[in-house]
Amino acid sequence: MRPAFRLLALVIAILASQLSVAQAPAGAPAGATGLCKDGTYATSAAKKSACRGHKGIKDWYADTTPASAKKPAAAADSAPAPAAATSSAPSAPAPATKSTASTAAQAAGGGAGQVWVNTASNVYHCPGTRWYGKTKAGAYMTEAEAKAKGARPDRGKACN
Image: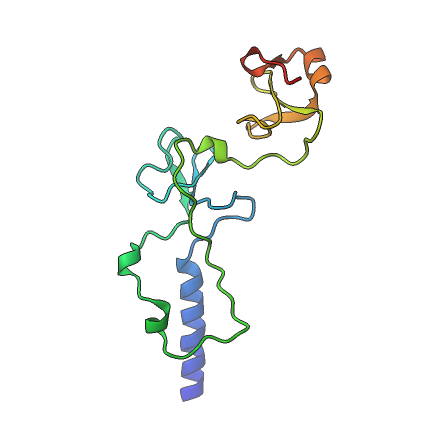
C-alpha cells in the first residue's frame, strides 16, 4: 500500500507543479512576461502597468512571487536532482520597455528589398523600422509593388 501511496503523491505533485507554472507560448518573443488584450506582448517585470494602453492583461506568464519569498533550490530539497531532469521555467524577463507594442513578434518572411505593407492603413514600413512585420494585418512586397497598390511610405520617407 505504501508504494502506491507514494506514486499517487508523486503524480499529484507533478500535476500541481505544471498547473501552477504559466509559460509563454512558443510564438512569444524572448523575455515575454504577458500577453495584452490587443495581442501585443509585454516584457515588464511588474504586472501592474505591463499592458497600460493596450486594453489590459489577457495572460500573465511571469511568476508573481517576490524573489525574497522564494526558497533557494538547495534548501527546498536536500537530494540532488537527476541529471536527465531539466527546468522548463521561462528565462528571466527582459528589462521593462516604455512601449510593449514594439516587442510584438515579426511576421515570417520579408528580407532584402521587401517592405511591410500595413493593409489596414495602406502604409508601408522599411526593414529595421519599428513596425516592420509587426502590424496586425499586412504583407511583404517590394517597395515598387507597394507604391503600385497605392500604399504610402511611413512618415513620408521612402526606404531607398
